[in-house]
Length: 100
Image 1 (cartoon, one colour):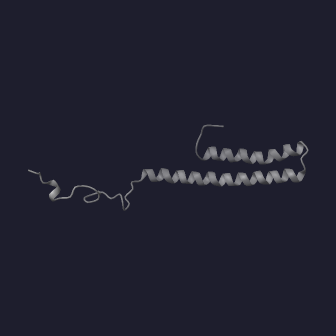
Image 2: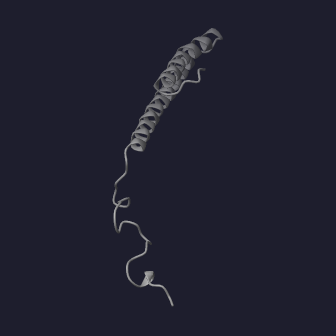
Image 3: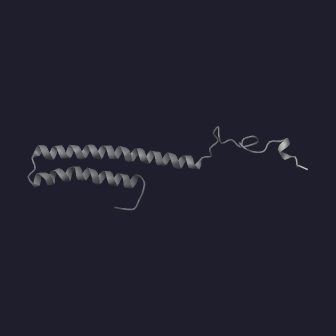
């Protein structure tokens, strides 16, 4: 396996899984498994491959979304800047007078 990350490695994984969906039933037939057993195995492997492909794509979209959010500044309700925005700060008045 290569050490690449991103869509290329996910596509490569899905290609190998699809190849296995074909290869495994052929090997099972070669070793004497019934046609129905090999077909059932092929269907099961195809279903697992499809679910894994969906999960990989969803993970890639989530990672891309996180990277996009890291690049943009957040200015939501709890992250305002300017005067009076920080909780727990000193306010004018009594707190600033020296005791003497």
